[in-house]
Image (cartoon, rainbow, N blue to C red; front, side):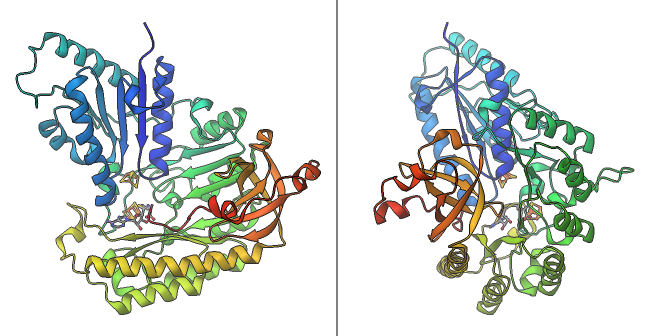
Length: 487
Ligand code: SAH
Ligand code: SF4
Ligand code: F3S
């Protein structure tokens, strides 16, 4: 018998990406193979995100298509994983009989067994079943598996499921305890739970032994790490210092930070530890105090700026990344202008900009969503344009500089490789040498594109580089990825 095949589509944040890697590891350990095409899979899994309506709509539409497919392939197992599974489990089980399993993000520890069970139950149901009475009839195993509290955090990862051998995410905490009025994450991911320092040092060592040289620590409020670990003095600064000692680790990043926890001890660690990536993702969300207050973010614009001032006093090379929401209920033109002003003043190097989307059950969902879609779109475009200009200026300032990049792989343009600087900036250079993947190489930046830079590799094989074909101008811009669009 051939091995069963799965296909997994992943939406949402980096945590979901990491969760998907863990799920894949478990399935592969159980003998499942990857189906490159979803149509060839025996098990179709979707790891979902609830953060905005748009993210959910894509999944509902995908589930609609799978329902049709299941009429002709009744053995197919359809699984909804992640935040929507947590949020809509009842609806899915009562209204979507073609969905066989619904697994929330805290229950991935035994996902392989759950999938296996669904396959067995589904096959038995199909065997027992009378032929479909109507063409609309579909049968699922009707299995739910949420809230088991068996997180996938401690799964020993299989190197093959990481997109890049030398880079890995590591989840240091789950959940979120912040009261942001608009946000569904505390509902879908539950309370903050930090993992003990010893476990994390252990996992980092295993990853490094496995070829990893860059680790990105993950948490919704990653710099609040440890506050739930009573009796232990566990803080992000201390954890960074511990991980920094691992000799073969070269880069250490962490996302996403909350402005309220940008503490002096963390700033000191950022200033003192050279392996720490030189960017801080610190979402401001808005530049207007009345909007920030309504959002329950717990800081004012002045306080946010003060924190950045303190950061730059000690670590002036740290670049800032942010998230912004435009069109929050009640946001006036004046509020929006204040956001534009903040962006210009702090010169963020990258921002994700989102149009406000009311999430049922959140505090702000009770408010009238009174900014018209036309205004949301316009504000989104304006803010994007401001960020693009800032990013372009910053890329331009890099021309002539030599930067060290970690090579990630081939770029979208043939004959070109791509890597990232310690500030997370994308740099492309002419080469087809796959052997460079995972290496840290010096590149001299020669041209700024809107979202990335082009450069020349400075290495022993530089002669080969200068002989490389000159790309056409079109091609020159084809791999210039947007870093500022609505993700
Ligand atoms: N924990 C992180 C981010 C979590 S969600 C933090 O607090 O910074 C990622 C981003 O999605 C948020 O920063 C916010 O900008 C955006 N977001 C969250 N809920 C949203 C909503 N209801 N509508 C639009 N954007 C939202
Ligand atoms: Fe959501 Fe706020 Fe928590 Fe971020 S800090 S995940 S925006 S509740
Ligand atoms: Fe989305 Fe869940 Fe992440 S709602 S942003 S996948 S925590």
